[in-house]
Length: 99
Image (tube, rainbow, N blue to C red; front, side, top):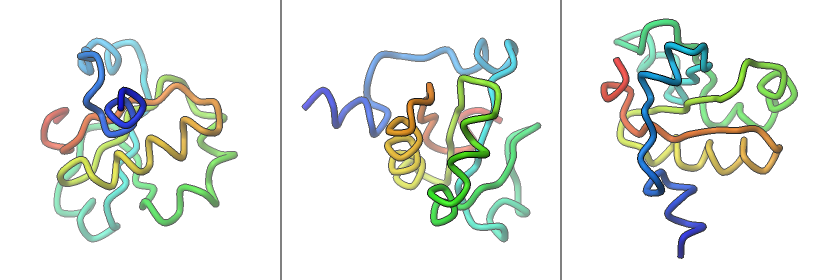
């Protein structure tokens, strides 16, 4: 059960502001249209369905990675994919929580 909690962002509390100040990469996994309607400062848009194809690019990004979306469901799935690639990643849930 702890495995599922950690994948979907219900694990230990993370200080996202501190991670961002220290250079974490923010990936918003919403659609391009959703991203254009508003997004966290300095974030990049990689829609969830493109994560597998861009995993090598993600592995080269500054860690840790913070993923976000509209509610936390897509970013939870993205976190699982990115974590499987051996990258430190955190699910922030809604993009508004880190804006």
